[in-house]
Image 1: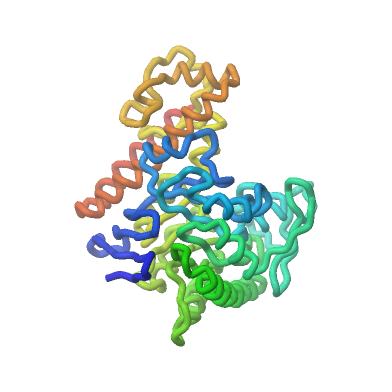
Image 2: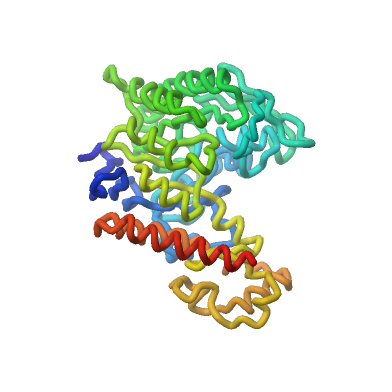
Length: 417
């Protein structure tokens, strides 16, 4: 079972009996991605503080960069002139770029890295972070926004997003969608799902034009993005609408992303609704998650790949993942702790350095701290997903994930004391 293009394809491997969890292989012009897989985020063409070679040694199969940030700095034309994203950042493996929609809207309403994940009964279509000025406005044609860097005015439409991402040259890119929050009203969510479908059709048309125009370049796969917030009917409707775009012999999407703000308690349910509607022979990418319980729920519901900045971002602030829970190595009790960050971890940091040393680096404001902590956190999440992948193949998914989560969250309760 699979979908193929001359340069891109997806093959389903093993499926867990009685469930949606599955393994597979995504084939790209720059190598294969064995799924399920965590895609390391290199927002500005770098996983912060870490060499690309080191991320590869940590087991990352692919990296994801951000079209919005690279468009603003250094400019997608410069990345293109360098030979594309992979050549520009010296990454030999597969690459992803997102459409810029998340950053345009999240930065535009002042939420920076995340959008509000709990509504507490509040609904509004004028969502804005406290004390912030709106920097982005949506209309039918696209989004007008001000740069968070210098305030300059810019315009993203589906066509411009496709042009930027074609210049960036990633193996997998995403259609330009409208990102909503859980605080938006039901009526706005309905209109937004339909607007995202219309934008998706325009993305497909522009992608087809650019693919033909640049016929000598490796094929770039295009994923449609499913919105619909917390509403089952809208999520299912969104999937069906995206699939229908290719039903009359036109170009269809090569895969699908599941986007939007998700209530943590309903994450698995929402991903499940989408995956029940999505084609079996297309890869499914869940945008923006990395916590162990979210990973397990997403894979169980049928997601193949996912990305998140969290492992590297929290590392720079002193938060360390371990099999016995997440803890803050900056705490005073680690000042004389000469054990590795995680005794069960096989990363470079754990093989050569101690908690006491990283505690010292953080307190001394040494830049090496960010490098060593990021190496460990990225390896932790990558290896966690690899263990889950092996468990699917072995038919032990429930047993293995249950043990992983029990140990992790029991340990988190202890380390938080």
